[in-house]
Length: 153
Image 1: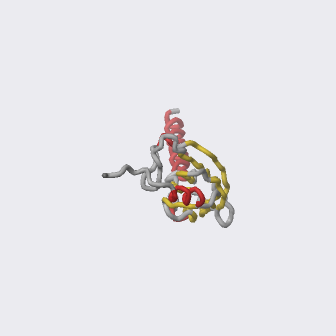
Image 2: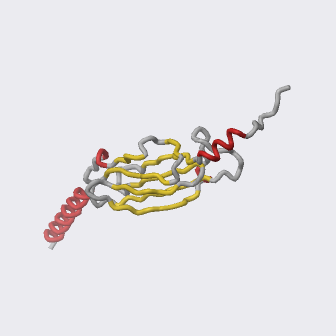
Image 3: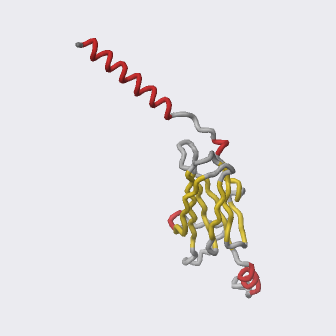
């Protein structure tokens, strides 16, 4: 009786150890990449932005777009980013990669946009891109306004 119990426990331990070895396969990080936008931070005058990249076929990717609306008058820029709690989720997309990877177009809000691309794979960190969206007409109007800097006289 004891022999059967010991043998059963031994077989059970072998089965458990084999199954955990199969699920902890190494992930090749070179197979997961965001192609566009390439830079971690950039500016754009296009309201829509293409997010594309590569990942093995069938990978479920989540793309989240956060925006920071400047209600505080802090005048956010790429050099002066908002705090983490100032961002608001504006859109979220679930994408499944095909044979050539993935590509989705997202809509930006005026100002600072944070795009997080999560491959949903253990061992692969989410990618983050910061995009400053501006409208050319508003930028020219701002530059034409008289300066509000106080005089030193």
